[in-house]
Amino acid sequence: MNTKLVLRAGYGMTNTPAICNNWSYGFDYGFNGIVNALAGTSPTGFVDDPAIYLRQPYPSLQGSLPNTDPSSANYQTYQTTARDANRPGYMQNYDFTVQYQLPEQTVLEAAYVGNKGTRMWGKYAFSELDGLPSKMLSMGDILNDPVSLHPQYTPYHGFNTSLTVAQALRPYPQFFGVQEAFPYNTDSNYSSLQVTAAKRLTTGLGFLAAYTFSKAIGYVDGNGPGAYYSPAPQDYYDRRLERSVTTFNYPQDFKLTWVYDTPVGKGRRFDLGWANHIVGGWQLATIHNYRSGDPIALFQAGLNIPNGFASGIEPDSLTGVPKTLGGAPTKVDVLYGTPYLNPAAFSPTPVTPNGVPLRVGTAPRVLPNIRGPHHMDETFRMSKKFPLYKQKENTFFRLGTTMTNPFNRTGRYVADPGVGDPNFGQVFANGGGRTIQLDARVEF
Figure (spheres, rainbow, N blue to C red):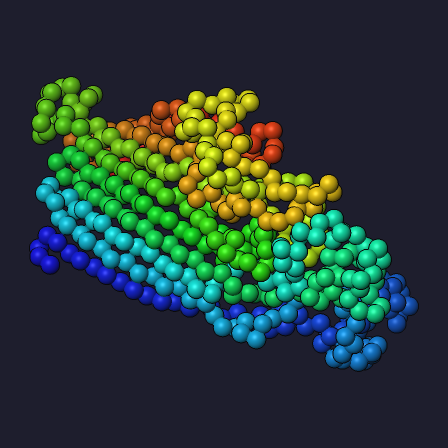
């Protein structure tokens, strides 16, 4: 725009890498077989010799391939793949930046940075093709009864009636599960305002300050293999229940690093003569980190969820009731915790006398506007160089000290987000204590 103002914009789109897993998908059932060669059966007659040698004919397979018997995999769990399984997902990245030069060699920059993931390799739990919709939980305890007590639910002649009614109601009742391998089934969205200010180390002071205000939304908190460990959903057939802020989202994050050369010493603002050797030439530096508190993902324990249903049933979030008992406590009872979340604002979902949930909960996967206590930490350093020889200007003795956590801050966290637990929503503290490290070295 001019010598002081610069505008930048960018856009990029990248595809996720194609998966080439050859025959290792796990859904090659019926196309392979096993021939056992038992130890101790060597043709030499010696028990410690190999059971088979390469010069021998390969043992014959008992049976034929492929195995087309439709009942051979009954009452087991297997994988399959969708016809469009190799249709890769993609990520769009975009940004718009305004950069302006201020006086004193200081640059101010403000940027919108975002990305959107589409059809990402996501949650294995969403890939269950033999699951039951959560609306059928209203059947209650009957779901865990054997089919022999309710023969009207027998899905086909010859079905094992000792299995549960829930198993009989599955789309494929002869299987204990049918999962899609490597599913492309999640989306993500990230938007942020990023502001930075930087000043070069001139006239004794230099700094870099960065502030980010952001929001990350998704169905899971990891893609690819990382999604394998994501919590189970509430309903295999309603992914909208899982869309929430992510557990790695911290809306506000501020970092500040500064370096300051004290104005005391030879050739500086305050020349103290002989005292310069002691109080002159010191350099101060500090790193500050401040960010929002941890996301809070509620859960409820003790549920007796029938086979075929998603197991990630959330508790209920009650409307019109404050979610906290006030701001996050700054003074915490280390042994017994300090109440923070309001137990009256959340409740377990309705269950039967045998613990079967009758529906999904109303609470989101991660609370959108309630977070744990914020995080604050600092690291301070001061150092000074002492010249060793007047004839060698580049030979110094450096003395310094580094102080970690100079304000003796503790880490505060919500220890138990389990609704109905005795310690639900209480804040505990750990950490604390200052660390001071002295160092010395010779530079030449």
